[in-house]
Image (cartoon, rainbow, N blue to C red; front, side, top):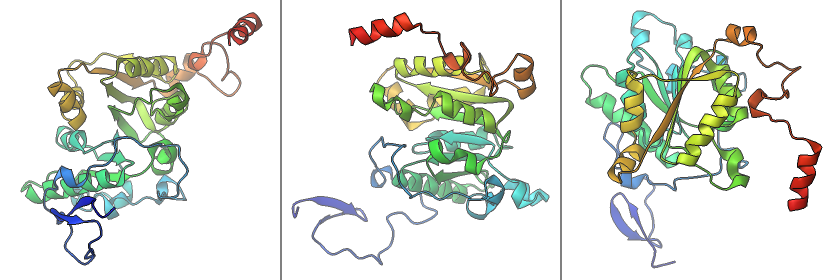
Length: 305
């Protein structure tokens, strides 16, 4: 309506006013963006059909990560080939990038990539990293970047097997309704994909302020044969996960609880020695939390409904 207002270049204008598309952008590249210009609704449906995301049709080998994401990666200075540089630490659902940029300094020898599904939020993180690179006189933050994609659909297109060392899932959408549980970022199917791209003994980190979702994370990961829960008290990544994200800071301000867990990717050979799941016994009882339900139990459940 004519009465609606919106911000364009930090100036309130009427929605019916003409817009100068040749005007300067809200944030110039190299300047620190202001979050208020990049707000977007917190949640979206990752399972909705859309063609807005591009991915390499020929798989991970078709990606040159230095072209758009790491043009001045430190490894290039010591003679590493561009094709050999790929992300080793993923912050999936990175939000406004608090953990992504923190991990860049905590893990200077790794390549950190934030992955976000929302367009405006991804642009904010891109500009934030660009500004941090410009402000640093030590060549910092050249090992970190951000990419807009739907990780629930396209992750295997970008990363080959046994190539990622750490995966982070910070304050994901809880999707409380039972019918929306397939939208949760940690599930049996997705854990198999995460196990595929993680190196042996790689780490999976998950944190939330919703206790029910935390219990779901633990249940899913405990039931998966490729992961085992570990307790690591001296891992600096845990402190960063708890304190560095914007959502984590908001939870702390509200004096609410945070629940996290860390899982180790069991080496493939050990999985096989322990009688790992294969095609023949995939649906056996106890695999992936599968439980035996008798016909009588099914009949009783149907009668109740």
